[in-house]
Length: 127
Image (tube, helix red, strand yellow):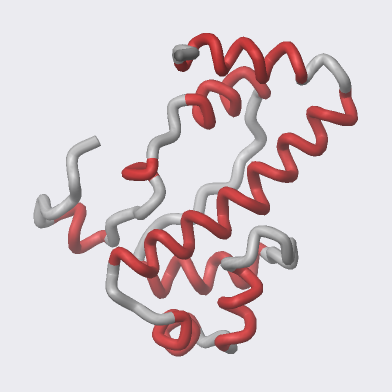
């Protein structure tokens, strides 16, 4: 069974091609956000309609946001959704080695982000 280090090394080797690096980074954003929004919404017991109402966007927008094949992400929408979920939205430039380290160590428990109140009251699951 490959270790986290082995997986990270395999990804880094494949990133030698610029075209693949661009696809890898774009895929991380598109798929990662879709899965994370859904996991965080579901951890609160919310429907897509609940999240739409809380964030002030349409249910169709939430459906599209949670579809990793849709790809229509905007910072404006993500800020509204993050606010509704009471979490921070962090957008930053990153090295590929840091990105591969993050994605190689990612577990399902990392996907659902606790809101501020859960964090300060200690109801956050330990990671």
